[in-house]
Image (cartoon, rainbow over the protein chains, first blue to last red):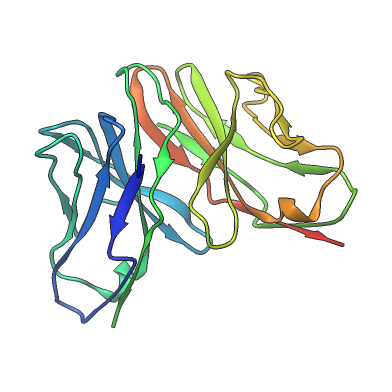
Length: 115
Length: 109
């Protein structure tokens, strides 16, 4: 199993550009999520999904869109990049019961710089 | 609302010293607490969770519902314990996992 994979590993964008960060998992996990990691702020939840076709907002959703058309993939779209979105982005997945949180498996991260 | 507080950004100790990384939480329901660790240039990985009540790499953590705490402890720190540690909170009726701001542990030789 590859686990959780993310592409690209690094990306530099100019302000106003759009792009999609890719995330895929091969563990048949229903729950997937996106976090951003910033110094002193820890990990903040951007969006999450409890299954194909179902997404919801986390703590810091503004400026980001997600969709979940398959169980395996959960892409994160930046609509119009801003310098404040410079961060390291982590995707994670876990099984779900709808009643409790399980261990989350993390991808290697995407380091994004917006100039 | 779910909230996790890790009051220390940095904790520095010498090898062999005891370590305690603090974590406090706020949650109206029945909490589920986790500790995740991120070694340099590696992805986050689960260290332990309160349900399992086990010791991993010499670390233990006890859920104290009265004090709403889940502090991570190790009696004798090792240099390889140097990493970023995150406390995370989930709970019944939610799949979401909310993370604290993290504590960087530095263990000096």
